[in-house]
Length: 267
Length: 300
Image (cartoon, rainbow over all chains, first blue to last red; front, side):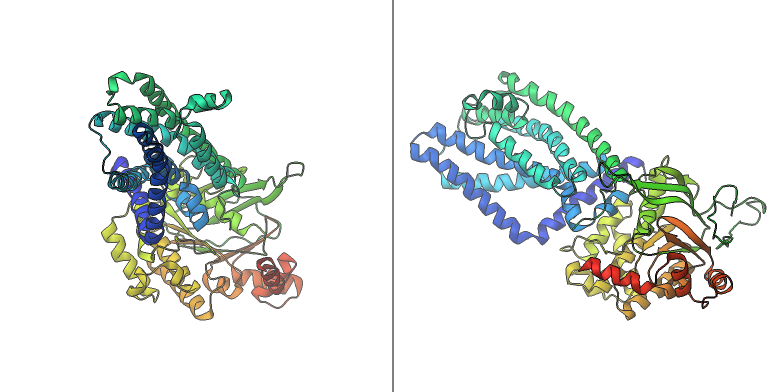
């Protein structure tokens, strides 16, 4: 077996295991899906109440695509935290696989899970608002920004996944706080121009800012990708920088954890 | 044993080669076989508080395990047994010294070492909601084992351990502690490790489960060509399963030899009864009962 085949098979191990976990927790999966759909509908209804179709679409896009990004973020960021809770972290770290293989499996499952989850919510919202028209939508733009947004978000999620390695007790909570900050500063439901100046600075380093803005412009206004370079290049730069940096930082964090004994089971 | 390579503690007896396996006609008789495990003057410290001196968990420990042998590590709670296992597993970095597994340096050839070892710890760590089969499939894939083969082997190994096939589909959390530990052993064996690290594998098991696991470990020795490092609090278990025993105290090797040699030594030198209990008390300064009482107090 070539090294590449071995690594790909090992990556699949994480996809399959996460699928098994989702299947075992199917009750919670359905509950989480219903909660997410209810949240997206509730937020969209604010626009409906205002009688403003554009506001309705703006809020709806924010709710649905933030759901996608946050689901992807959570699965990746909790890669280590889940294993720490279960007590299996040392066994996974002992396995003869590269850390990039480990993370590749986590990322692949996160994206597929996020797409299915988001598609279900999209269907619920469309059924709830049957009069909505997407006649002007540019699907290529929407798809393009989802892909670009996913990869640039993956890098940040990898960095968040490091936190439970470095901080045994509080790492998972820190990752959750980071996700909350991204929600606040990324203009998910409003324009970032209304944020205080210091928050706007942070919003410019959040991939979600550009990804959701691009999806909105594509879905509501039908703007083609070629006219959205202002949103595309930051995502490309962030994806190119964050993913290798995330992998490098993960490796450093693992070495630190092995030096200080922080891989040991806790709880 | 290469005496020039290993620094022996004062109380150490000569190490008995467990299973010398030079292959006639392939390896010259005078060429020492590559050991399954070589721990050479290893030290590990932990910085537990910023303004305090580091705690030395393992101090200048050396050992050599020949292929096919079983070495037991005894010691009170906190003596460094599990830390030593973690160091050999690559779960902790070495501060000083080196570790080799079948000639592969742990730090320079980490992947090669990882392919050769597996570990069973005192806590049978699983995804508790997943079934034994799902947990073992995950482990098998990480080691590049085909899923069909892994399924067949899982059934075979667990049946040998007395676990019915129907239990392999139920969540691990529904299995008894003894069964979980047997599944943990099956997980380790599934990857056919050349070096098996057993960190208190029978602690907390009922007598029947303990006996099952011990019998299975003996069988592994005979049939799997595995070399075994075993840490345990069960002195009878150590005597029954190990060719050689190392006693750790405060991270240091304080005695080393075969069970018979150690028993004879405490009888001749200290006038103690020739039992493993006397060996443990003599070299750790405490009885096993003290150790168990402390462990229970910690649990509470």
